[in-house]
Structures are given as structure tokens and as C-alpha cells.
Figure 1 (cartoon, rainbow, N blue to C red):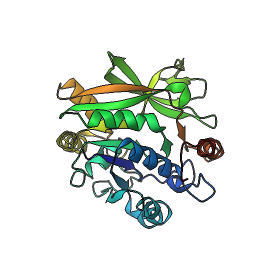
Figure 2 (figure 1 turned 45 degrees about the vertical axis):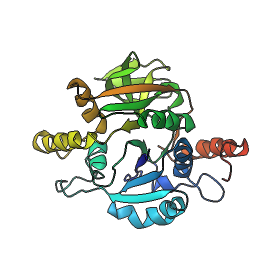
Figure 3 (figure 1 turned 120 degrees about the vertical axis):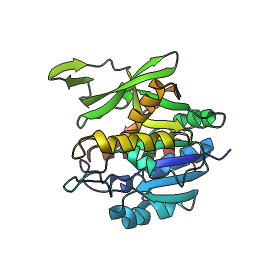
Figure 4 (figure 1 turned 30 degrees about the vertical axis):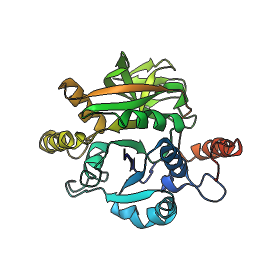
Length: 284
């Protein structure tokens, strides 16, 4: 069965300071996306769709896309920002970005962030699920919190409530420190370091697109369009509540790496180059 990897790559990386999707990891200039595409292709995915913005299209293709096109079938989707009100600087969020590829993606698909390294097992679990999934049988990979934190600043994570390996809900925890502490309603709290969290690695079937369209139209009518965001996880959670979808959760102990801050880059380079040296990425 054909399966597609959809990569959210529209962000400019303001905290990192530049087009962080293109930050070189290997001496010859390969980046995090090269590792993710390698792992996804090995797992069985046979197409990649990059969601980007018009402002970065030329740079992205030159620094990333043209190289990856040599290894797998690639298409590009430009995130539509025509609904943004004057004065808003960033797009509406992941839900609207994925909706933009509804006319391109015709197979079961996975979603990832462009600046995260997920490890190979997550792609294997998602692909195995998708090849047998019926409409509304979604899945996600949950990572252990302590394997997703940065020593260089705070991060936001989706804290998962799970029952019988099915997702019940996700609640966003903001500005989590390396020890698991964060603020909620002005009060300091601490998450256990083995808390399962979402890193935006989802497996979905194409029936999600009508749900996204409905949710997005409601968002445009009811949201504060200067500040609110339309997230894919909110649409999925609504589908769970409406009993039109379920989400199987796969627990993953791979170490996540990401480039949230420029200081993260050295750690990512050291560890992924060590994976190459150990033979996990032949040909790199």
C-alpha cells in the first residue's frame, strides 16, 4: 500500500535564528530531514509532501528539497495564508497547514515536524498501523518526556492521557524545563519524567480532511484570529469525542532530538553523527 509522509516545514525557526530545517548535521551538509526521510522510506513510506511557505520556497528547495528529491518522490504544498488578518505574522497552525494538502495527499499518511529527529521505530510503528487502518483508525507515537527535553531552554509538550493504549486527551504544557517543572495558571508544577508526550508524530487516514475543513471553518468564525491557532490535535480530539475516530498510541523509547534553540545544534550533530559511525545510516 502507498503511504505518504507529510512534513510540516513552514516555520522559519525564530528562536533558532534562521531556516533551521536546513541546519547541517553531517560534514557534507545533510540535515535532520535527511534522517527522517531515510527512516520513513526504510519503514515503507514512498512519498514525501513538504508543507512550506512561499517566502522560504526557493531557499528550502535549494538547501533541502533538491537533495531529498533524489531519494524519494517529493511534492510541495504552499501553506495558504490568505485568511490571515492584517498584522498577524504567523500562520494559523498545524491543522490549517495539513488542510492545505487535501488535494495532494490521497493515501494514509504520517505527519512530522521538520526540525525533529524521531528515531526509526516511530516510523515503523506508524507504517505498520497505516497499511491496515480503516477510516478513522488513527494512531500516534508517544515519547517519554525526559527523552524530549532541552538543556538550553524551555519547551512545550502535549501531555497525553492514555487508557488501554488509546488516546483519551492531550493537554498542552508550556515552558517545561529540563527537570520537568513548568508553570500552569501561575503555579509551578512538575511532570514525572516518564510522562508520555506527543511530538506531533501522527498516523492518519484521508477522512481527516473533511473534519479539518469543518473545524477550520468554525475556527474562522469563532476564534481570535490575531492570536489563536488551529491545531491538528484539537481536530483529532474532537473526532475522538464525537466517536468518529480512535487513536492507537505506540509508546516509543527512542531518544528524540530537536533544534529548538541554536545551542541544541551541537548535541544533535554529535549524536546523529555517532549513529552514522555506528552503522545505523549506511550511505550517509
